[in-house]
Image 1 (cartoon, rainbow, N blue to C red):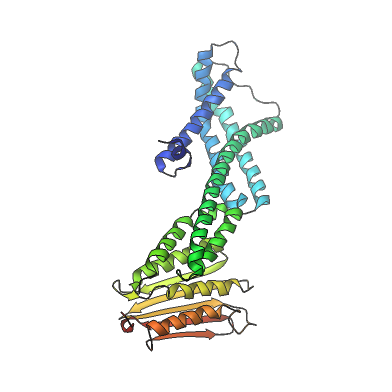
Image 2 (image 1 turned 180 degrees about the vertical axis):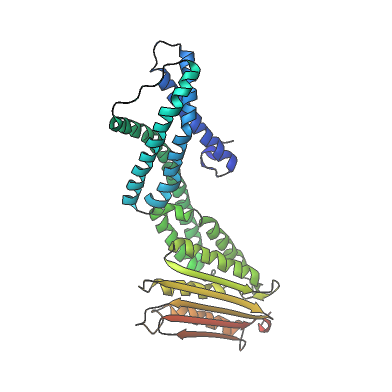
Length: 364
């Protein structure tokens, strides 16, 4: 077990180990601190009594701390919902105070009686008791949150370095036309922004980006690739977009059926999907929806895309029609007279349909 793995690994055993160390350390700290407050009893007796008392009340502390680092931080702090964060933090503190008072009044006297120690005295002012307990538990909560945020910052810096390195590697290849489509640079640029704004969202993106990059760099130079692999690539890309858009667009991907042994020219499917996302991002509308449906049967591949658009626009956004033009040229070279690529611009949606007879590719 290395120190780095103990601190950062998501392996279950490592996580249990570091959390156990944290709470054992916390229990020992408070047991020693509590022991020093006693007078008239031996240190050994008061230490073990304090150790038992702290151990019994620690589950309350754990619930409070984990509510902060696994609920308040990701759901409110990282999403900029600061007022809700403060209100819930105060609510959790009040709930903790009530539960601790139940422990203090009904459980602690029993524990003291087992060791023959003096029973606890009840506070004269519950307001003073609340603020005293509030400061103690939030010292613990802030320590746990500081550790969590420190780890997040370290991981974020590593991921940012990784993204920048991958971007430096891939940009020359895109410029030289060795990698298509160009969405790789677009997605890497967006991930850089997300790392600063919403670092937790990026955690699930790195692995997907890596698999996309490896596939694009080492397999896109083949004349034909597995349709199954291309559809897996499409799914990875759509998942990336879902993470990046964070629920702002209703995305529906349907892969109805396909034959596992079918092949297709690489990067026909992905540029069309990337173009749809790009087109949709350029429109300022309230409810955005993008639906992609894919079906391949008897050697015929069909792909249908529809996405929302403002009613007052009647064309594709400037410059983005070039993507479909390039795809059309590629189709004419590889699947001459055996494909159909059509664009339908309706009142509030744009529809793109692609049909390819995969059995009639030239240079197959």
